[in-house]
Image (cartoon, rainbow, N blue to C red; front, side, top):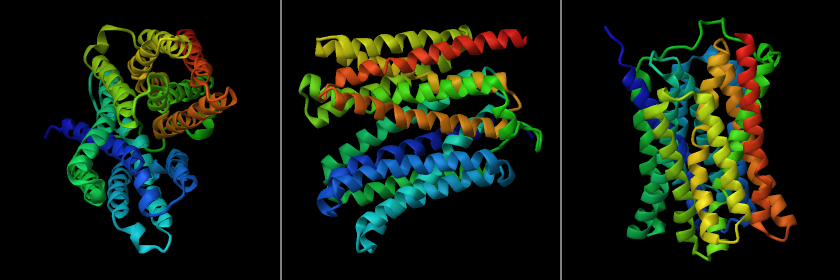
Length: 394
C-alpha cells in the first residue's frame, strides 16, 4: 500500500501553526494579566524569557535523545504538551495564590511542545520522499507565518466581539488545534533521515567545519528576522505616531504577511533558482531594508523597510536547514536540533542587542536597527564560505 505522505505534510503544517499559537497568544494577554491578576510588568517580562529558554533546553535535549525516543512518540508528545499548556492557561492561574506561578507553569508546558515541534517537523518533512525538498521546506515554514497572523487577527476579533474577559474560551479554542493534530501524527507515515545508529553524533558534527558555518547562518537568520519583527510595532508607533493596535497591524502583521509570501513564493518557484544564490539576494535585500529603516528621515519609507524586510528574511531559516542538510546528509536529528538552538539564540540575542543600543543612544530606535545591519552581512559571508567549501569538497 502506498504511503500517504500528504497526511504527514498536513500534520506538520498544523504543527507549525501550533508553534505560532504558543508563541503569539499569551503576549496578547500581557496587559490583562497585569490588570486582572496584579502580575507586575517585571514578572510579565519573564514570560517570553521562560518560553524561549525552555525551547533552548528542549533543543539541546533533543539533539542527544530524540532518536532513542522515536520521532512519532516525541512529536505526539509535542501536541499533547502544547494542547495541555494552552488549555491550562485558562484554569491553572486561578488555582494558585500567586496567579503568576500558574501562568509560568503553563508557558513552560507548551514551550516544551513548541520546542519539540521546532526540532522535529523539519526533519520529518525532510525525510519524506518529496521532489525539490527545499521548496517543500520553505512552504512548510510559511505556515508559522500564517499561524502567527491568524492568532493575532482571530484573537483580536474575538476580544472585540465578546470582550477580552472571555479570553479563557479563546485559549481552549486554540488548544483544540494541537489536540486534534494528535490523530494526524499518530496515523501518518513517518520516516527517519538516517538509519538507526548511522547519524552523526554531536561530537562528530562539532568537528565538521561546515557545521559551524551553518550555526552562524542560523544564528544570523534568527537575529535578522526577530530583530526587525520584534521592534516593528515600536517602530511603527514611534516613527509614525500610530496607536498600539494600528502599530501591530502596520508592523508585525505586515511583516508576517510578507515573510509568509516569501516562503510560499519559493515553495512554488524554487526549482528555477539556486537556493544559495536566492539566499544571497535575500541577504542583500535584508541589508537594504535595515539601512532604509535606520537611515531614512522619512517615516513612511522606514516602515516600508520594516515590512519588506519580512520578505527578505523569509527564506533564511528554512533555506539554511535545506542547505545544511544537503551538505551534511548524515547529520540526522542532531543537526536539526543544534541548528534550531542556534536560530533561537540568534532570535534571543539579536533583538536584545538592538534594544541595548537603542537605549544607549537615548531611545533612538534607528540607531539600534543600524547595528542590526551586521546580521545579514554575516549571513552573506557565511553563505559564500559554505558555497566555496561545498565546491572544494566536490
